[in-house]
Image 1 (cartoon, rainbow, N blue to C red):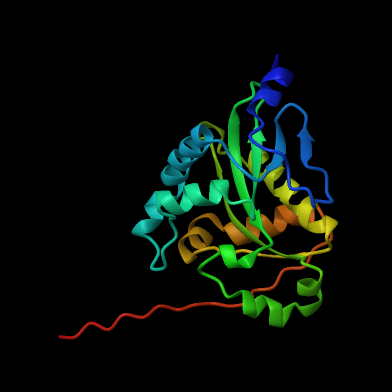
Image 2 (cartoon, helix red, strand yellow):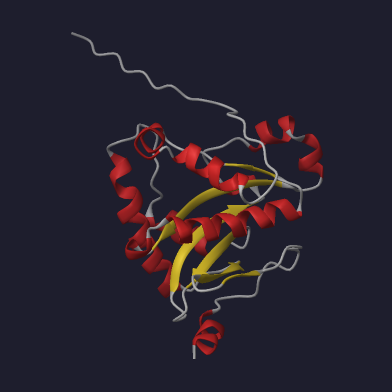
Length: 207
């Protein structure tokens, strides 16, 4: 039954040019598939999970951290943004990670910066950006996060690629997220990490 549900819930064919496996097995936990399109029902459900997870950052971070609904749903059907969807043993979509190598789909970064810094990777179309990871609220545990991180790392590793991502100061201070990602990643692949930029916001109060 689980296998049948899994086949029924596949929303689309995986990217045709993806060299890494497009379905990753994590026995007893989840299957993670690389999708180009997420069904509207799953997309709406994921947006609810996304708001619950990221919504508090609206008042905790200066830079906007939360996609508007139309922005989120647009990513769910944009084939340039790969959706790594975790499916539980009942065939339910339980986790989502976005990954792209078309940096023009990430409006808050400069593709030219990456092209200048990583010219060889850019020529090979091997520069990626990790957008966000979200799970069902009851499944916010390290194992599912690690499964999706592992799948994303395998996609990038298959290209011998580089992957950019950003973390706001609140998440780093409260959850040590950067350290957590680095620690988990070293168990998955040979990898190096660099802080490539910072942005400091100032406020002048006139009396």
